[in-house]
Image (cartoon, rainbow, N blue to C red; front, side):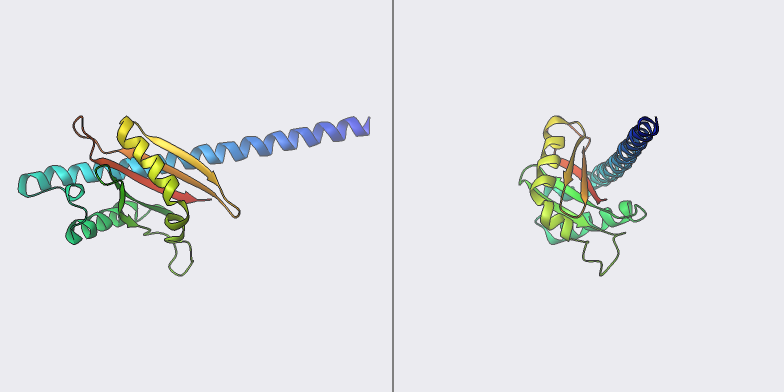
Length: 170
């Protein structure tokens, strides 16, 4: 009887842990997608204004001014998102531009490390969002963390200029 009770408690504990882990992961993914969508909306607003005066930043990201402008936009939008890094993906060149990690602790060794180690995964998710015109995501387990990647297409015409992406290490 004691063994049966012990096994039942063990299964209940494991089930509760698994549910909690899944729930936390789902909440983090939803929050991160919200960050990417906020970044995409901020870019669309900036691009609409820019088209009245000059080219939008993703139209010429190789230009140092555009690259700096995109990084500033990323820092402003993600500034209060704890531990979130992000930037933009330009469809025409397949490049990641405007990267910033505003809330990742300086000197932690994490800022930039996620971009460096997960660049291929970030590009794949961001490209998928840009080409499908739908949000895209990936969960990448690593040796020391789980990396969540979310990307949102930048609203616009039929030809997408790219997407906004956000990444967080758990």
